[in-house]
Every structure is written in C-alpha cells, then in structure tokens.
Length: 325
Image (cartoon, rainbow, N blue to C red):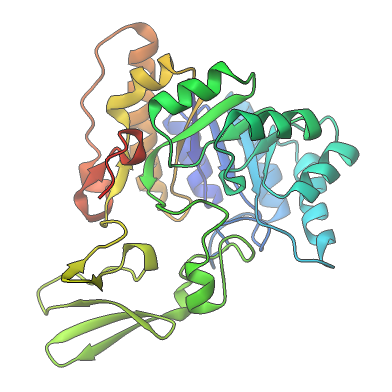
C-alpha cells in the first residue's frame, strides 16, 4: 500500500521523503488548500524544487487544492491547478465540482484525486466523480468502518485512500460549520479551522480559560496543560455531563488495522499532519514505512511506538471500529 505523508513545509517534504514516504502531499501558501496557516505551505518555486527532490528519490508529490472557490474569484483556484501541473506534480487533490470540471477540461493529463473535503462516502458518488471528472482516487472520510470500505471497493474501480494516523476530525469533512460559526473562517472556504488569530488564553481566578472567538472552550487548573481550543474537542456541558462531548483530545492510529485495510482493498494510507514539525513527520513516516514493508513481506507487524506523538498521548482507531459514545 502506498504511504502518503504530510509536508507542510519544504523541510518537512525532504524529511518525509528521506524517511521513506512513497508520496507526499502539500499545498500552496494561500486559501486554495485546507491548511492555510501562517508559516506553512509552499511558494511556486518551493513546490518546483520539492517535486524535483521527491522525484530524484523515487517519491511522488500530490498538491491539495481542496477548498471551495468563492464565486467571482475562481481564477485563484484555476491558477493553482495550472501552477501545480507546471511544477510537475503527480496529482492534484480537489473537492469542488466546478474546479474538477475545470481541471478535467483544461488539464486533462493531470491526475485528479478526490479530496476528503468532498465527503464521498459511498460507491455511487465515487463512481459519479470518476465518470464525470476522471477521478482516479478518492480520500475517504473518517466515518467509515473497515467493512464499509471493503464494500465500497467491491463496487468501484477508483483507488481508495484512508487516514491511518494524526488528527481525528469527527465531523463530515467539507461540511463542518463550527469554526465558521465561531470565527467567521472555515476550513471549507478559507482553509482554516480554529485559526490562531482567534485564540486567546485568559486567567480567571485559579483557572486558565482557553477561548476561540468569543467562546470559552476549556478551563484548566494551574497544574493542567492548556489545550489548543478546537471546537469539536472542547469541553461542554450537556445535561448532567461535562466533558469532551464530541471527541476526546486523541489521535487516530490505525497501525494495528493495516492488514484488514489491505484485505479491504485500500490502495493508499494517509498520515495527517501538515501543521506538524519535520521531526514529527520523520518519526511517524519511519514507523509506518516499517509497518507497510513488514506487511508486504509477510513479516510480523512491528509494535507501534507513536504514543508520545499522539494528541493527549492517547490514540484511537476512530470510526474504523465504529464505537461511538
């Protein structure tokens, strides 16, 4: 199975490739990709250099142009597709139907992958994207069991890519409005979820409050770590319960499920983390490359040593086992 790894910066791209990534995915430093944060992403020259480096080492580069264009400003997204092709990338990762149609018409030789932002979660819609826009691969949303993924693969010839490590989004990707509601910016349109410009930490007596926009997401004591205030992983009160109502602060880690995912017909394994350091990227990629190589060779799977890199030092298999609270 192909190991698809995050590259938020040119340094992270080099680290991922040198650690054994089969492919890396990245984005331009603008609102055309869903990780549009200061200090991240690639200029046009940096992308061309990154592609050349990856290709010299036998790796591929995929560019995420996976936000939804604003009406009247489509040229920004059209230019990103053209510039990605000019840089020699191996595929673009798109979500918007209009942008897919544009790419299919004006860049027919450029491979088109369907972003998780499209939230394509059944064979019918995946086959529609393949038929109408020539989509070669779909990144499946993180809401499916292994059995559901296997069923999809029996009904489509489109390659499937699934997340196996990193941040766990509990919403339907491309449909979440929480960040937009709280801050006016969303990953779907602006490429920003819970933007740092809206984050504030305020001392309230003996407690430290973590706020996003005008909303208090966490309150912690003096000896407790203050988490980043992401809405879906905040602490809320519902009825008599106060806590992580939507999702705990944990990371997805599906290492133990790799044999089942291979049997289910999965083509590629995606690691989340374009906001992470190059050291983080290198460690995670090395661990998963060892696991993928062992699986391919029929050797026992190595024990995962990634707990320290998981959010809250805890991990979950997420929806793959479908154990919702």
